[in-house]
Image (cartoon, rainbow, N blue to C red; front, side, top):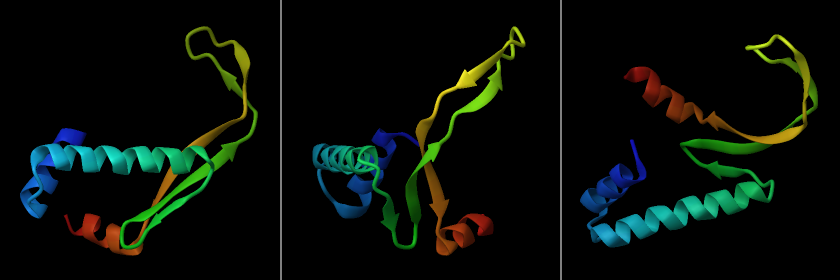
Length: 92
């Protein structure tokens, strides 16, 4: 599923023009990126929660050469689905 596919679904279900549907999807994703980049979480009731986690420095290994290296600390985005979302996915 791509952003274009999502925009088509919004166009079909809501009745917005295709251009308005694409703009709405773009605004939604840009807003989510901005919120997550600030380190805040996003909770969507009935869907799930997007969280920003800090991963500490750790040792790693280059799979090609086998050389050990240090992986620097970083932030990652994780998604925790809600119970309702899990139930829908498990039915499929």
